[in-house]
Image (cartoon, rainbow, N blue to C red; front, side, top):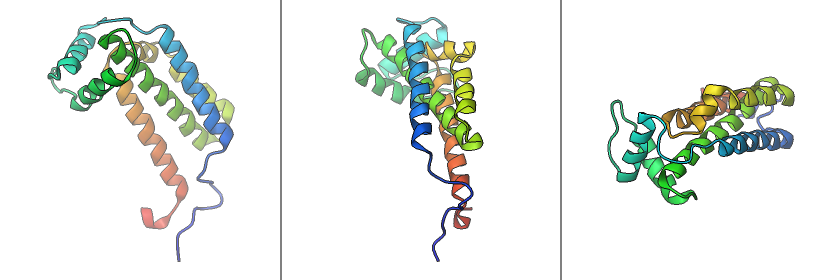
Length: 165
């Protein structure tokens, strides 16, 4: 007999929640884009990441090879006047998607559009998160990883298929 999801927790999100999550991500991206650092820097870590991604080098321990590979790829895909700007744009994009995932995670937990918007936009406009989203740093990519994994764990939990765990 095939396992079916539990009727008490639907596994699919309503269209309104998905549209609202995209809107939260776009609002955050718009704010980050307006305050994006225009070039190299501003910190030594940012400069090191920008140069290492450009020349396919190595950064200080513990290193971050996945960021350097993704950064190099984004330097060739994203538009912008300089390679440093493109890497800063990559951070803004990752942080914006993380905000959308936080919205979706909160919605899965509360089923409230208001609570989800408040949680995601509170993260988006938190000063430290906003700063890290406007420069080249590992934190925006890592926050995207964390938000995506947390959302996927919640979605998996909502399936409630006994054969999966």
